[in-house]
Amino acid sequence: MTENSIDEKKQTEDEALREHINARSREVLKRLPAMGPILMLYMQSSHRRHHFISDLEWLLLPPLVNKQCKLYMKDEYPISFASWAFLSEAAEKRLFENGGRLRPDDWNSGNSLWIIDIVAPFGGIENMLEDIRKNEFPDQVVHLVVPDPKTGGITAREMAPFQGNRSKKTENEPGKTH
Image (cartoon, rainbow, N blue to C red; front, side, top):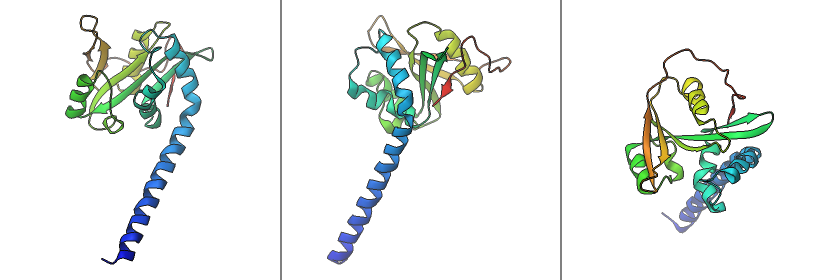
């Protein structure tokens, strides 16, 4: 290989990387309107209010960009939020080793469905979980990441696939998947 062809290859790789970053940035920008209501919920939540802005990079941006979250509204006000990931066995292991943190590439690394974040400062978690099981993933086992009060860490909860009639009606507005 000549020096010119090496330079051309590097330039092509750099351009491809810039285009990938720009495309990813455009996706993030499309989702920004949802961040305000979600951040309002985080501020009201005892388990999320003390997170740092840098935590949004691993906690909120991946599900927003990947459209793996749902924001529930009532009378135009945010009332709850949930995010989910499809994890590989290795990502599941890291999830518990890292206290619930996922790498961006973990969010779609496998087939095991996990609810990663639930923020419902005004209650209604069971209604939200029922809606997600009925209307988003009716035929799948759903795993939940839940706080473990004994250890201060996290633990897992598993819910069997939904059995029954599917309905889009819920007590609150059904929410919008982002």
